[in-house]
Image (tube, rainbow, N blue to C red):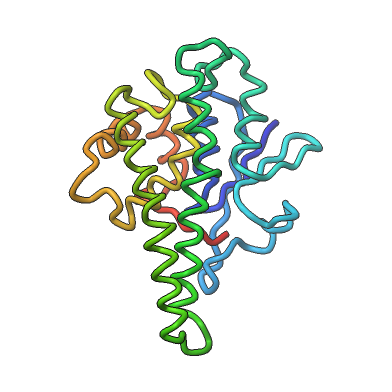
Length: 226
């Protein structure tokens, strides 16, 4: 049987939600982060060469990387609406947003996270020149790209209710982690009504509610460190 090795406050929530949306049979093994380092415990890291979440095991298969896991699981459910097939009217939209999570949104957030960590936790003083460089990276690269991406999200969610189109797809599921991380940082305050409506829409889904119940956390909150 497939086992999801679920690390708290991590990307593995996406796989938990996917399995609930599919009504799949699976085993859930949960892990808590190290309270001092905020990282995954050693027994979790030992599961995967990367030591990151999520990880599934299925017989002799050990697989990491969220979208690889999603593809692997969806291969077992070829008729699922979570993966619109070639020729479906929402296929292109689904593909774009499915790949935008690891290809655009998360890299932008990761770069911002690294810059912030350097500014806050550097063992040596950050020079004014380096701060100026960070500022230019944000002004000329990170912020414009993020605003363009969020603008496309707002526009598309105004036309159809889900990132995948008229129905929930794996595009919504893979985006849930970086979208909540962005919301926690206030990215959607004072605007983006269609994006905020998407949050309300997915939170009303039975599959999302059951995933949250099994996640057993008071609120949806995600951390980038694994």
